Image (cartoon, rainbow, N blue to C red; front, top):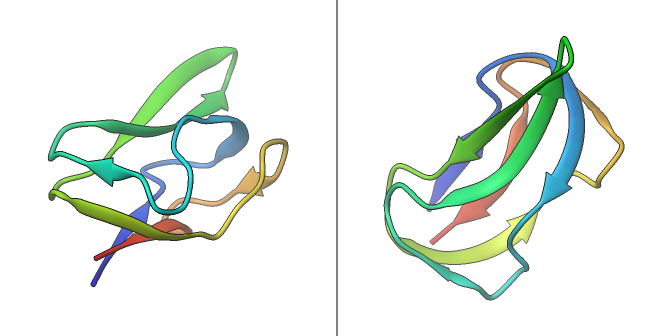
Length: 70
């Protein structure tokens, strides 16, 4: 299992995957809004999204876990 973490602080603008989705390395998982910019958060490994730990609209700190992939 691996965790997908936020690279910076901001608001969770959009989650583009659902639990159970298969993802490939480099796929976007979510989009973070910070300082009026949209920053895509992508996975570094292929697998299946086991759990999404945040909701759209949540404030996220750098290093917070966004999703768990297996």
